[in-house]
Structure formats: structure tokens, C-alpha cells
Image (cartoon, rainbow, N blue to C red; front, side, top):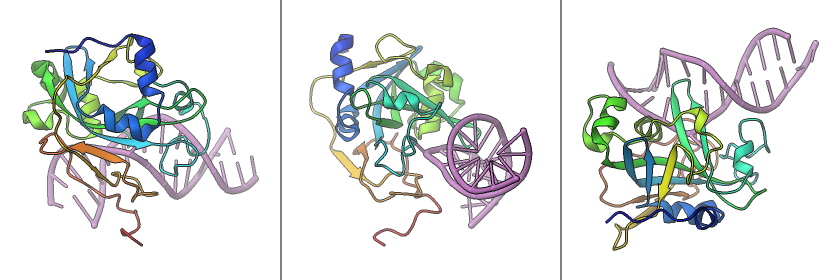
Length: 205
DNA sequence: ACAAGGATTCACT
DNA sequence: GTGAATCCTTGTA
């Protein structure tokens, strides 16, 4: 049974908490982009000016301004000259924070997702942040829109038991690589395989 | 292990 | 204003 969307005020309250808390609670919830609906299976929390791996680390800029606003907004950035990555802004207005959406399982709109992504296995359609953004059809223009009236709509997780939540280091970051702010659902084939940043210092040292 | 690839940001002038 | 390093990645080797 598809859960009804929450009203904007409740949705904004959900996202106006710490990125770590929001990240954990996002697992199993859903994001809709056009005809494509994905269940989020892997996310990473990013802090503000105290998190060296966050885009907001050096304070607000033209690009990262949205991260300092109220929760429930979309932040899309363009990475490595070819990929888009979708974040959902967290924490209270004035404090930077976001959750990077790293992977999701396509639960509806399979044909549309494949049209965007090409002919790949179902589990690979939304595996990895760049691929997930592509499957959702997210673009830079989505930045600043809300998840209750924008092109990307969020709905809470369905009732009932959820897979075990696992925690581990974030992917692809060269600084603060060993903070366990990545979380994912166990036994989900859509979860990306871990790749440490090439320039990240060795673990534990 | 590495290249493709474009925007952002910083260190300079 | 200009040049260079960096980057929340992916697919192929």
C-alpha cells in the first residue's frame, strides 16, 4: 500500500533535523521523478562548516547557498564534468546540512528509468549517485525546489519491517573519509560497491 | 589503476 | 582577470 504524502509542514520538520538522523530515516522512503519511483537504499550524511567533506565547509557560496536554507529542498550538483548528484537539504534554516542520495531501487516506472539509463540490469538502474540522479531525471534546475511541490517528490517509507540498516565510511571523499555517515539497507542489490577515494589516507591512520 | 570531462574555488595578479 | 587544483563519479583496463 502506497503511503500518502505528508503535508509540507510535517515534511519540512522531518528534514529539519541533523543530516545523520535524516539519512537513517530516509532508507526505505521514496522519491519520485516523473514516472520513476525509487526506494532509497543507500545515502550519505554531510554536515556544514564543521565537515571537511561537505560542499558547505567553506561557508555559503552561490552553489552551496541552498544547503544553508530550510530542510526539504533539493540540491543537485554537477560532478566530474558528466554526472549529476542529488542531495536533500537537512537541518534547521541557517545551518548547512544535506544527505547525498547514493542508490535506490526502482519500484515503479521501470520503462522510463531504462529509457534514461540505457539497457542495464534492474538493480543497476539506480546504483550509484550519478546513476540514481539520471534514473530520476534530476537536473541542476531542480536545485532549490521542495520535495513536496517540486519535480522530485518525497513520500515516507511504507509501514512494516525494514531491512537491517548498516553504517560505514563515506565514498569518494578524500577528507574525513572514516566518519561512518554512510548508511544503507542490508541485502539490497542496488547498493553500490564501496570505493574509497584514491587520495584518501589509509584507514585508521 | 586511470581517463573522461566541466564547474567551482582558490591563489595569485 | 587568469591559471591550476580539486572534485559527494563511472566505466573500462
